[in-house]
Length: 255
Image 1 (cartoon, one colour):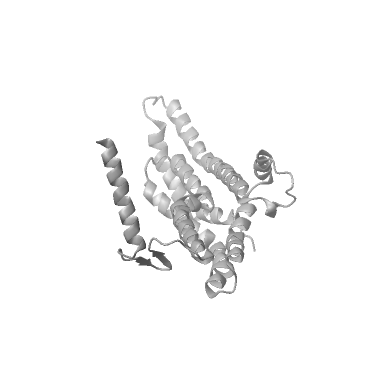
Image 2: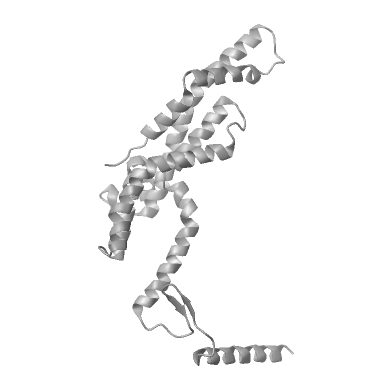
């Protein structure tokens, strides 16, 4: 019974292939792509298929590129530290912090995106440069931005781990080495900013705790009393303005 089923399946496949080859089935036409069961004889047509596959793969990796290769890491980690230092639990909500971080990232990365569009995308769409030149011109502004934020120590760490000894300039570092070094540098910078954010709020917590202990109110949580004072201080010094200004200015934007 199993052999009969396999033979039947092979027979159906053979008949379908013959019918497709004879033109019994209509061809499927897509933009610059035709699916008709025939072998591709032109090299350019094969390249088109590869380009479409590469574009679809890039779309699936777009969220990771947005998170790992832009200012999003530093901004979101700093916002999370700020919320913890204030002790407001889930206020602002995570969705609000992520949205704010996304728009600040877009603001910081706007000059880089403009260079990528003007130097790479527009000339390629006009036919002034070929595909290889487009890839170089399109990715160079992003590489320069990442290199400007990456510490030499972190870059040397991953260059040493990759065992590449012929790199003489920072611009020669491959992207697979630059990306983890950039992420590590951004996390370090965000933790340093978070430490500075914690200091004023920690002072308020210590003062409130000392006062409560002096009054013998051991059963009352210091966080409950210190939270209004933290919010008052944050509002009085216009904390959001100071933090966002410091965040944007902390990025080194290449000319």
